[in-house]
Image 1 (cartoon, one colour):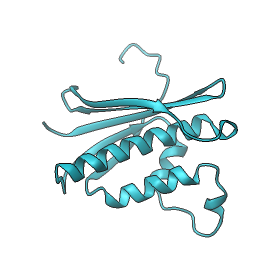
Image 2 (cartoon, rainbow, N blue to C red):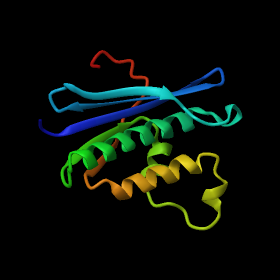
Image 3 (cartoon, one colour):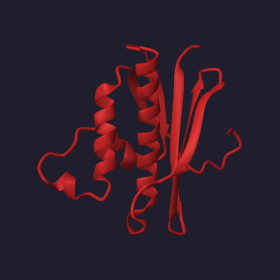
Image 4 (cartoon, rainbow, N blue to C red):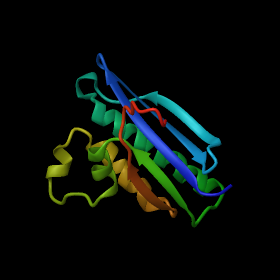
Length: 136
C-alpha cells in the first residue's frame, strides 16, 4: 500500500463547528474518510476547536486501526492548516495549572493520550489552507 497520508480540517460558521478528515495512500487512493460535528457548549465553539476536533478524530481512527490490525511500526504524514492546533497537539504540554484553564484542554489532552498509544511515526506537516492557485 505504501506510505499513508492523512489530513484533517475544521470549520466554524454561524455558531456551528464541524470537522473532517481523510486518509489516503501515496498514489492518492482514499482509504478512510469521515466528518462530523465539533462537540462542546455552543458558546465555546470556535474554528480552533473544530481544528483540534479533526485532529482528535484522525488520531482516534489511526490508534484504533493500529490496535485492530496489530500495527506496531510504520509512518504516516499528517497534514493540517492550523499552526496553533499543530503546536498544541504535537508539542510538549505546558506544565502547571495554565493548560487546565484552556477552553480546549479536554480535546488537547485526549490527543496527547492517543499519541502515547500510537506506535507509528507521525510526521506532522503544515499546509496553507484556502488554496486559490491552479495546481490543486
